[in-house]
Amino acid sequence: MRSAYAGASATGAEEPPYTTWKIREDGEHVQTLDYIFHTEECGVGGAHAASAAPTGLRVDRVLGFPSGEELGPGRLPCEAFASDHLSLIADFSFVASAQQGSAEQ
Image 1 (cartoon, rainbow, N blue to C red):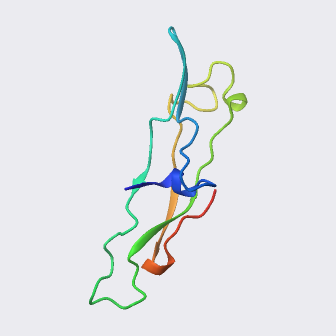
Image 2 (image 1 turned 90 degrees about the horizontal axis):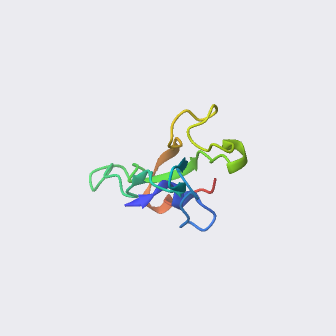
């Protein structure tokens, strides 16, 4: 399994700096707790399929994250982001095995 966000990062291995950022009684909590996992092989195609049949998934792009300044001093949830976790979105394409790879943000 691969992380869509890590695969779309500049290095191909970096997770987002946070998916939740809360102020609690015991302090500030900045954590990456949420992920979109996928397999590169999707099982479409096979020995009896045409050679151009999709056999894998490629991450085309992912939704970016707001800065701490955009969240504001109270962090999450806030007026602009109603949940205490940020939304994750990834666009995927079906590709032939030789075309697999990840695009950067």
